Image (cartoon, rainbow, N blue to C red; front, side):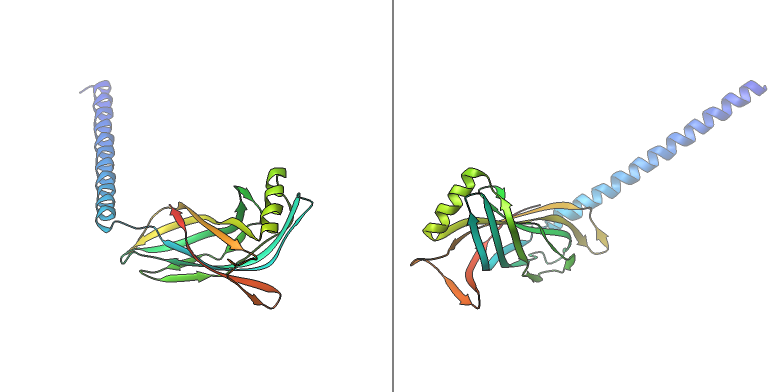
Length: 210
């Protein structure tokens, strides 16, 4: 065998070895992915369930139809309906909107783990000082406040991971929407005066998307 033939044979052998290694790696990855999908299909993970239980309003003032100052505390419960899957809440931001406009700052909830069938309850304060509002929203807010009731949406945005045994998934976006109607005054009010604030029992189920 000449030197040229030997080099050609050696290169062909290396190519075959590389192809076999790549094929084995692809097959291994395919089997792992298939097993994960099968386990996922069998377990059928369900989204966590959120409920807006109450809201305690300390301040809700509209000035000149332009700026809004708010300060209130909400109680939100989350239940993991899965009996074999845990949930990591890596990041949660709570805020309020009025007619799709954000009217409070973000309030962070500390990261936590939620076990099977567990329930977590959070009571974050959300507030905003002289937050500019769109002119049309400012007029509507003033009118609603004068009428004694305001429709808000409490939102939670964050990231979650699923845990099955020792396997933990990648991060998924979590979007929670809790529409609520707060009657500040009038015959429909459900508020209870607590010091310098008014607490409203809501028990409003939220929409959850992951």
